[in-house]
Amino acid sequence: MAIAETRLIFKHIDSPGYTNDIDCYLKNGGYSTLRKAITMKTAEIITEVKTSGLRGRGGAGFPTGVKWGFIDPTKNTKPVYLICNADESEPGTFKDRQIIHKDPHQLIEGMIISCFANNVKLAYLYIRGEFPEGAKILERACNEARAKNFLGKNILGTGYDLEIYIHRGAGAYICGEETGLIESLEGKRAYPRIKPPYFPAVLGLYMSPTIVNNVETLCNIIHVLQMGGANFAKLGKPNNTGTRVLCVSGDVVKPGYYEFEVGALTLGQLIYEVCGGIKNGKKLKAIIPGGSSAKVLKAGERYKIKQKQADGTMIDVDLALEDIPMDFDTMAAVGSMAGSGGVIVMDETRSMPECLANISEFYAHESCGQCTPCREGSLWMKKITTRIRDGKATVEDVGVLKNVADNIAGRTICAFGEACSWPVQSFVTKFKEEFETVAGNGAKK
Amino acid sequence: MSCEVKVSKEFESKVDETITHYPVSKRSASLPLLHLWQEEFGYVSNQGVEWIAAKLDLQPINVYELVTFYPMFREQPAGKIQFRVCRTLSCALAGGYELFDHLKKNCKIEGDGHHGPAVSPEGKYSIEFVECLASCGTGPVLMVNDDFYEQVSNDKANELVKKYG
Ligand SMILES: Cc1cc2nc3c(=O)[nH]c(=O)nc-3n(C[C@H](O)[C@H](O)[C@H](O)COP(=O)(O)O)c2cc1C
Ligand code: SF4
Ligand code: FES
Image (cartoon, each protein chain N blue to C red):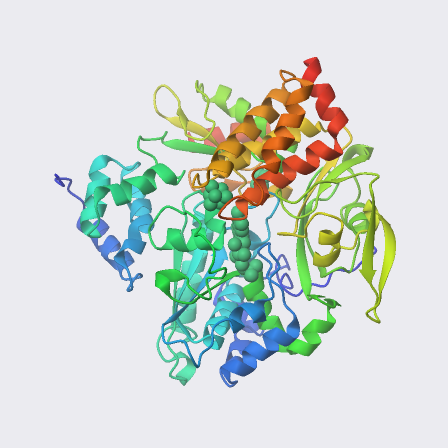
């Protein structure tokens, strides 16, 4: 393998002899960062996180320090809550499961430090219902941490009290959306809340300021404090700092999870060098770079974008698909997104109408149903894509499909509207000819 | 409203302990209680809804609307051995649909199983498609009851049917 991984979050995961109990974690230096954190002022910790440039790993890439900074401890009189988003359900994403199963104490330590920094006394870890074993592992990890006084009353003699409870979801993708998650945690249907306020940090759980962070984000907090925010910021690229766990699935020789400095490698390097290329000697057809809601990239495409140089000047560059560096900003510049880090690869034999019909069925099933454009539109997109896939549509249906998608995005309560329409818009635009051919000619899948 | 259903002391104490996790609002315990109920009784009956509602000082509709919203809760029993096969893209590329059909045939299950279990005639097996189980790199994947399996070939599926049967 040409490019070396930088394993921060996955440092111990899969290494021989590493187990998920607290003794093993302690032997490897676990909870020493918590010991350091409790000697710091909370404002100092938040400053380190701001300096680190860490951006959320849940999908939106929002700067974590900025999010935490929304809560002004001098003005706020309500209790602050923290919720770890372990709903991991964006198709193509499978990193949080690994952390939960194989290194749960890293997550718990990251959570405790984050709670301490934000003066949180009660925190929840919202884990998707389909991870029953993960929930048990985390329960045990919390009990172990409680027994060592890393959690509970008067943590390590500081006078600081914290409780973390594991809360299981029940199979609804929309619980990953942070305000849907909060509603769900309040014991209601997971209907995302109308914005503003844009951030639960303003108004969240039980009408109180609430921090929602992804599993990988919270693990990163340990590493930020361990190496210091400024050193953390040296990893990766400006505005795209630290490492990122990339999950690759689909038609590659070696699918799996790999951790690199953000932007350290290109999409081409990831697929051809790290993952051993396309399976069975086939050629590449398409890539979804950041979870199934990210816009698809087509083999052979070129992208004219502006790229920031080291000295801060902007230059025009012309990138091939394979040359796109895996960072937040470039992925956005080429018209897609780094999203949740889930890279799905499709080879030349794959039918794009079939792939899109699969994705559209997912979104039709998962729409929470609150907004008419999303509820009705996602269902129609499923019906039309299925019809096209089965060759039972007309050429005009392809245009109708695109039109439905265009009328969802931007007209809904939550970003699910974008999540369900982006795949449709991009697949249909980029593979128009294939869709029109398959739609009209009764072609078999 | 009748709540004549008898639950064991053990069950009730588990429920009471769970409610303590939500000191700010008991209502937050709705989902955990539904999980406990379904684990104990196999599905969520009307009685279950009423019992939980009474426990949490809620109206039954507040609980029932959760049962109909969250895909994991059932109003009828599923099979004793439940297969949940991932349907989503990466697994589909790796043969998830073929696996689903194979298992269905093997367990003699009629019915669709697209979201919501299809049960075999004698009630032993049930199968359903579920969405991405967050293990897309090792597809096709499935769950048998609460256990999780990756890279499930048809042969491996046959073994699982034997193992749990
Ligand atoms: C439809 C939808 C689904 C989402 N699913 C997840 C998820 O499964 N896990 C996650 O961490 N974030 C998910 N998010 C993002 C969360 O809303 C939120 O931005 C994130 O948890 C914040 O954490 P971060 O700042 O650490 O990234 C989803 C967002 C949307 C709109
Ligand atoms: S956009 Fe869709 S998922 Fe989001 S609130 Fe509206 S209906 Fe629900
Ligand atoms: S697509 Fe099957 S686990 Fe993700």
